[in-house]
Image (cartoon, rainbow, N blue to C red):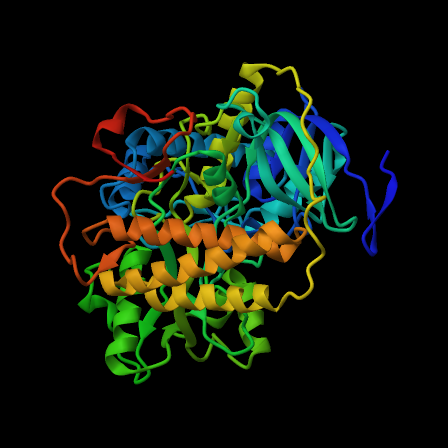
Length: 561
């Protein structure tokens, strides 16, 4: 039980110390998948900083890639993924995910996810998206993520072995190096209860990061407000390696409207015949790639960015009005309604679109079982770097990765057995004060995201990256001083994590002296002959390596002590 104590001028609750078998941080598809595969055997606790439905998974529109058609093949899905990844995909990871896709879809069907089906046969309807050589996208109209999340959420809430804590944000991982025990092991996490306004100590045999990506590091993004790089930053501070952070995917088609608030127009619109046009109606994608609108996202995003800058226009237009109106309403009901609410009838006119930051292809380095460099710490989903996405993620491979690696992480956890839980020091905020003003947080939040948008966007230069690095370094100094002086809050935690993630992105971009996939440099327009990952790790850390057989081609940079 917690007790009430008087501290300074405010009434505060004493810390709680709680134990659990598995602590999962995050509430997207990766978190739910891992939890449901564990809960019949272990006690699982899910902590999420807002509500359970506030995740990028819930916002996912397109679908889940899986080979289910007899005219398709696993080998074709593998090759499409490798080609989109521009030489940096890890074949072992790609083959594991592609091979696991049919069973992952079957599992979701057993849980009664309402996928769209063919009227005549009752079979799953398969659509096609950019970079895919066949129709293999399983979907629930144009709101697949929401359909999957709602279905799994019901299972999570009903399971007696799963405890859910909303309005809780992780502060930092509890490592052996921090508390004087085995320096290569994770023992849980310090978590801020936002309603009680106090940091509790969660001790766990296993800790799983499922916190998503870092889209909010940019001024314009398709991501929800929760995508602040929390897991990446915490893992880095704990000593884990991160890889390929320079590869941030900009989705080509975000709705351009002052009241749209980062509304995504799914890639399936182009897969079903949508055409990209300039304001005068002229098409342009055929000038950039033979696949035109069905080229991978990095190519389409660069093409749109190039046309906008060359012509001085604010947006381009995605036009599917040449298709039957009933077809459009049936296949894209949510997009149709959202556009109508803004005065755009996509059955009769094109949709104004611009690129926006969408997906973090890099992340915390993990092995094929989602294990990080710290024993008992796992990372699943967008927070991780599995090697699946390489230099550019193939459409609809992201939800699939959550499903396959969530199951793999659960299997590894069950195989590793329990750990004797130690005595862990409580969170100590006795030497800090309540914040006297929070204008610094709002100002630095805006400045950081604008600097990343201006200098570390779709096209980069050494000069732009250097400017970003200087500004981020100054912002970090201010943020860390604030962090040392005042009690933590949700905004402070997110800003601290966002600034750390921004620094990792910029440093990784500076180290890549070529243009590949999502990283385009005007100073280095060509590709190096050998594709190599950018891996950042720290000196004087004892986190073990988790590199697979392809490690020989990787680059390792020990930039920071």
